[in-house]
Every structure is written in C-alpha cells, then in structure tokens.
Length: 244
Image (cartoon, rainbow, N blue to C red):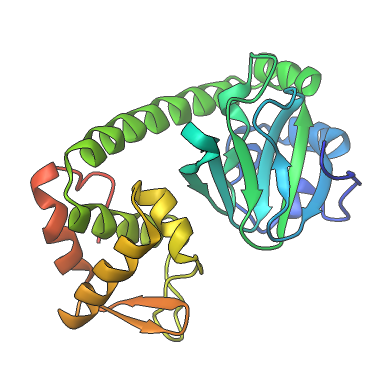
C-alpha cells in the first residue's frame, strides 16, 4: 500500500458522488454496512494508488478526482490504458488474482474509498444488483477496450490524436466557464494515451488549432469543433463511445 487509510466523515448515503456503485446498486442496509467497513484516503497528484505487481487487497472507488491506469511496456515505457473520474472503480482488473496487472496514478489530488476482499465477497453475495452491475461494467469495459485497441492499430496519427481528445471530453467533460477540457495533461501523457510521441502530439494539436478544431489556453485545450474531430474518426464506427 502506498498510503495510509482513515475513516471518512461523510456517510456513504450522503456522498455527493451519486454514480458510485454502492449508491447505485446496494440496498439501504448494506450501504450502512459498507460505510462502516470502507476506508478513505487522499492521494496527492502523481502518487500511486497501487502499483503494477502489488498484491490485490480489494477494490477502490473514486469519490472525487482523476486517475490514470497505466501498464508498463517494452523498455519500461508507460502506456495509459484507461482514464477514470468521479464514481469510477479501480483495481477490478486484478480482482480474483494475486497481483494487479496495471497501476493507478492520481492525476490530481484524489479522494478514494477502499473495500477489502472479504467485505466485497459479502457484498456480492447479499446484493445481486451490485454483482450484476459490476458484471455489466466488466462487459462494457471489455468491449470498449477491444474497440479502442482495434482502432488504434488501424488509425492514422491524426485520427489517434482526435480520438484521444474525444476520450478526454467523454470521461472528464468540459469546464462550463471557459469550455476547456476538465483535465490538464502533459504532451507526454497525451502521447501515452494515443500510443505515439510527445512531438507528434504537439504537431497534430497545432494542425487542429490551425483548422479551428481546437484552441489552446496555456496547458488547457478547448474543443471548438467536437463534431469536426468526430468526423476525423467516423470511418472507424466508434460513435457508440464518443457521443458529441
């Protein structure tokens, strides 16, 4: 474990993160039981919530924050395989195994709730809707991963960057005040998402800016024409995952 846990002062039933699996699928009695069993922790930006190869102790639920799920490739290069935000779960890829096949890193200060394996087993047995909801989540995540892997293998560099921008919009949304993507990434992190290099990301973003598809505000990006970005990847038939 990379951080110490403590009890949260906020009861699960009063949590503002209404997309949490516990609030969505658990009966009232079990929400109270989970509230007593869970642990709460704050991870600072850049801190690992868990590392690739760590032992699996349970599941993590993001109360508030942003997380990148990473896998280490050849020569130790990091690949971002998933992005997660408020209400999302972490560690499910390792559930049922001894170690996590991926790591999770806070992209900003992130509040996380944790349920250990023993508690989760009781929750699964006593809350069929929770178990079914998690099963459907696994199914959806698998389909999305399969589609994305297929597309990235076939996409041009331009299409990969457009797809990455739309992924960021779908997961994190946009700031209502200035229209910027509600997440700030380095060019290297964007490259890790798209499976390319930071230099190529910078070049394509400049091209998109010249075409009035995006504009930059410091390190932040505004999608001026999300439909235009979607048209770039439309031939890959991914509209189910990138509604704009």
